[in-house]
Every structure is written in structure tokens, then in C-alpha cells.
Length: 214
Image 1: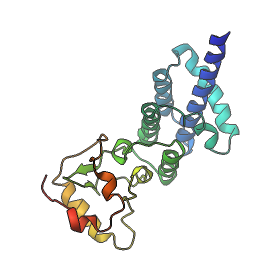
Image 2 (image 1 turned 30 degrees about the vertical axis):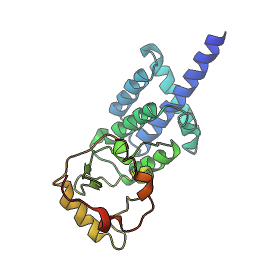
Image 3 (image 1 turned 120 degrees about the horizontal axis):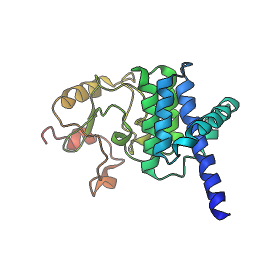
């Protein structure tokens, strides 16, 4: 009996995850067979057997259609280990970019989901296009590669990522352009320097500590 309760609980949870994926697929009002194949593959990776996938998707579609807020889906995901939440985020991006493009509604959805799912890893871990580059004591973003999805913004531990349309951003845009052509790409989170807390709230760090060479 205990096993059956746990199995039911797990299936309910995965149905909510599936509803979240379907919501992302439908937000551009064009739910495609390709997107459904991505959803099926993701459900398999999360533990649903092939014979149960279609049923799970049908149940998830009903949940998604009857819900008016994504909180109904994300509640089930927030308690997952970080690696599983990242797997779901990756599946969401695969769905959104299955047609080679992302509109404003899709990118806004991903911006909201990054906060609602409590993705706690640093910015480079959640960037879908790997546009971060690493210097000696600073990261930069390559403007030509960035898709302005905003997912990295809530992940930055020092709130350093700003839109390039903000007043005074011209200097930082040029710095990012220049050094992203020189420094190596970084796509996975690394441990911060041992003394990072010491500098967290310090002002004028660029003028004091910037090093161009690696």
C-alpha cells in the first residue's frame, strides 16, 4: 500500500511538470508535434515509462487548460534537487527554441520561471546560449550572443547584470564587447574565490581591481 501511495504521488508530481512544459509549448499559440516529442523525451528522462507517457500528457493538458497561473505547476518543482530543476529548465528552452526563435512572451515566461523555481546556481549555469566569458576577476557577456532572455539576472549573487538600455550602460557594453572577444568561454558554475564575501558590497571594484590579462 505504501508503494502505491508513493507511486501515485510521483505520477501526480510528474503530471504537473508535464503541464508546465505544455504551458511553455502553447504560450506562442502554436503547439507542435516537435514540441510534444521533446515533452515525451523529458518525461522518459524523469522516470515515466513509455506506456504511461500519452496518458500523462492528456492529464497534463487538462490541468494546463483549467489553470490560470503557472504557480500551480511550479509548486511541485521547487523542492527538487538543483540538477533536476536545471534539467527541466533545459527542456523548457528546448521547447521554446524548437522553432529556432523565441518571442517576447516565451522569454518573459522563462524570466519568471527562473525565480519561481528558485534556481540558485550562478548565472553561467542557466544561460541557454553560453554567452559568458571569464577574466581574471570578472565575467563579461558577449552582446552578439546574448538573446536578452533575462534568466541570468536573478541568479547573479551581486546583482551585476543590467540591461544595456539603462543610463550609463555604454561603458559596460564596450567592456563586455572587448573582453568577450579575448577571454575564454565559461558555461559551468565554479566555486567563488575564498574572499568573495569581503568584496561583495564594495563600490568601484572595476577601477580598483580590474585585470585585463588572465
